[in-house]
Length: 92
View 1 (cartoon, rainbow, N blue to C red):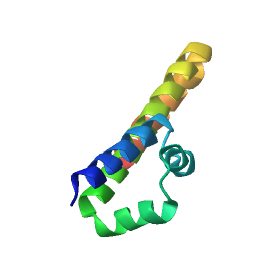
View 2: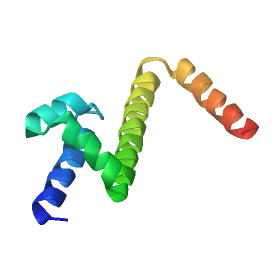
View 3: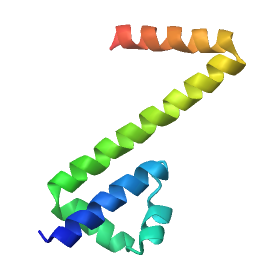
């Protein structure tokens, strides 16, 4: 794989994090097509794994921000939410 392609893929993953995992504005900003992006996902297993890991990071960041805001604005709701998560974890 060419070094320029590796750099392009790295740039996509970095910008995806900044764009909360939203593909369209990420690719538009970089000037890449969605066809090219989905071809990378299909053909490059490592890129595919990194993409899904990036989405997990984005999800964790969003949940973290939500939890922080909930704790600040409604501590009782935050406590109930945490209790729900603990119960859910016990059942799995």
